[in-house]
Length: 445
Ligand code: HEM
Image 1 (cartoon, helix red, strand yellow):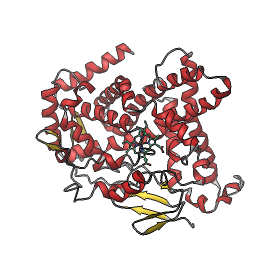
Image 2: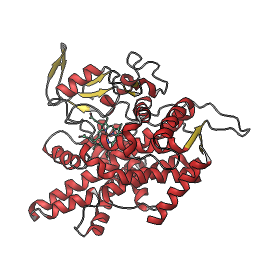
Image 3: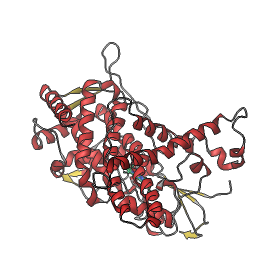
Image 4: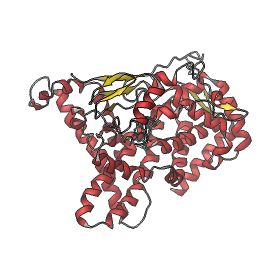
């Protein structure tokens, strides 16, 4: 009510406003619901300013490109867990993906392990992340009628407010619980995880600054789940329909993996430069099903003029990233999953617009600071799945293939609504490799 909204459908305009005029357009809209749902500690929703800057700096110290190689082992282990689970119960794809991503994030961020079944931490992460939906679905009414939040929750018709209180508790636990557990484990001595490295640094501060810095560090470490779990899950779940609908992509990827990696081991980060096709699959995955179709809304902090248009301060700016990465002028046959579009003479073609230039947002100040971590995760998960599994269409009760037509869901994060597929090891050798890797993992646990 009374707030201007600017919807941008063009990559150049988005870049002009959000890259080149980032001093004016790097804040976020203030939403009453963010605090109500308990996400006020999240870097994603913080308005631009000193407080946001401190959190961003604390986060970036552990997620800049030079920091990512330190997470290679945990990311490889996460991918191996996925393979082992998919071999045993391929019908639980979504559960396995979330579990494997959770394992990798939790180990990297807090040095904690996630149990194979019914892990209390994982349940808290899941409950907390579901509360983000409230920011989209239900809380809008509270933006317009904030007095509703003052209504006693024992009155009939206020179950929504009671749910908010529960969501708030879960969102706070997502931030605090893994930190407290990492602290108990850490003893202040090593740098096994992002949290323990942060704790070592805080231990050297004088007590007057340490408490506030610990709050910032706790929030920054919690962002790995808060912003990393659902986004990466949304991207990776779309791999399976993409492959079952495009068998030729699997054939091409396998030819490359067979010649570079061979049948006796799984791909590693060391192989990455020699796998241009697999790298192109990762790029196409992010474009084909864009997990954040409208990016994350920005807010202008001063009056501005662009191409003759007046943009008042406090305008919400939303970029239609989906339409940009599905523009047929840039990406021919945009609905086809076609990694070849990024390749020329067997190498990545620099003339093709890299979709990552818009998918992770805009401008040095506010662009997704987890993008290098996401890129590494997606590469290793995608390479490992392609190396050992054959992904084909789901079958009906008569064992005939079903043609699926997955649709993107609404929300800040978009998923595909149908990921049914058949997942089988692509050979006896591949199956043996998964089993060997899995028993080695158990032996070294
Ligand atoms: C497929 C994966 C991902 C996608 C598509 C994605 C996309 C985005 C987008 C569009 C933004 C808003 C940027 C802007 O305002 O211009 C963002 C912000 C953010 N992302 Fe990601 N992201 C992904 C993975 C991750 C991961 C793995 C992490 C953490 C490890 C992460 C952490 C963050 C944080 C902390 C912000 C807020 C930055 C700020 O407001 O200053 N993201 N992401």
